[in-house]
Length: 612
Image (cartoon, rainbow, N blue to C red):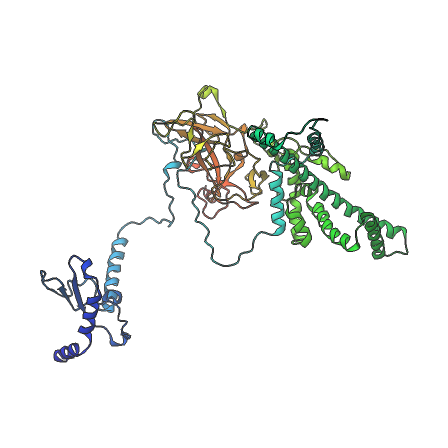
């Protein structure tokens, strides 16, 4: 195109009109030195689509000319001409490809002249919190020293809902979790609760002596302020007893109804065998008619109730009496709608029967007394601590904990602790876990949480720290976990019976507070510059049985309560039935001739089986 024709085209087109309108609407007062930049470049005509030309940066085309026009009178115009030497990129795609190929050849040639070491793409990040350091600052060479990581918690990304339906836990699975929750709660299911409630009600009804003048309403109001706390306390006790008695009656009701169904079926068989002229259906109809007369119900009422009671009986056949006694509110709904009542799910649930009896016998010593009502044995099968027994996933009979360690230590003994014990030979009467106040100014007799900055106290009315309420500042309940036998050579493991949400404390790592132990499994920690170890070889709790995993679902975390440091086992998000695992840290595996059996694809410590 000739230059004269180009000039006429620019003058006759709406270019200057549109440019003036755009500049008039632009907020130039916000810029200190507003400058209009005009850049010209040439492209293929077919690539132009209406007004969607894009920019030369987006199209990666080198501009031919750049002209800057200052919009203030105190500035001067500048022109910039593009040249091959000053252009930051080639003028054509072919030039760019050639330049890239030339650059790649130069890089390849320089790399081929260097000796390269073949390495994988994955690298382990160095974590300072997992390195054991002695008092003099030298790294410890002793293995089996577990460390509490300093990384931020939680590590897993939060689950984002994508709007797609995902199947939830089955109704039978929810019922099983509810049974575990009832067993590990503060529930009291004993027959003497009923007799105590009857005596308490009779005593309350007869408190007024004969001939005693009842005070007027005004007199009662005058004494009400003095008796408010005492009345509230008595009301709490009375309500608790009534609730326990009601819960006990509910358990008795369920097991009696399940037994009635068994007796009904036996009576139908008896009628059919003793009366050859009666079919099974007619024998059943006769038994129902006799039951309706005794209950005073219509046949429809009895049949509706029998359908639910038969569900109780089927649950008893699969999970035992323990599942009925400790059943939650979902039992009625489960048996009414008979959801998940199939052979496959019942066969899997049957493996939990012995495990439930272990937990119930060791936590509720007198629960079997309720079975005397239906003629069952009241003798406990399992005694001792709940974690004195090792259960099996296939439903086999549990075995004592000691028997699983006799191969490694014929003299093995283990004492279950609720709190750590100080080794007086190492620290005397001092507790190395004591943490000085974080601030120089502190109120005597008060402790403030380092995480939430709230007041800590063992008194529920005073305590305001809610960081780990299942362990501190509130009543403690048994942890819903069991020690189970692993199937891949890791001896025992720890299994969660209920779900633990991310950030929830499962338990405290307790044991013997000591120091200078080597070549044994210990957890190493320090407060300030004072180091100590927690050893669980002979004393401890269930946290001893948490196995290592290179992809754990729990971790150890430090927490200061009332001026004392505690090591907590905190969940990263654990579903019911999953094994609880932690990362033993690099310092545990350093120099240890041991193979990691976690089975994860990201395992960092599995030995090369082909190496010799």
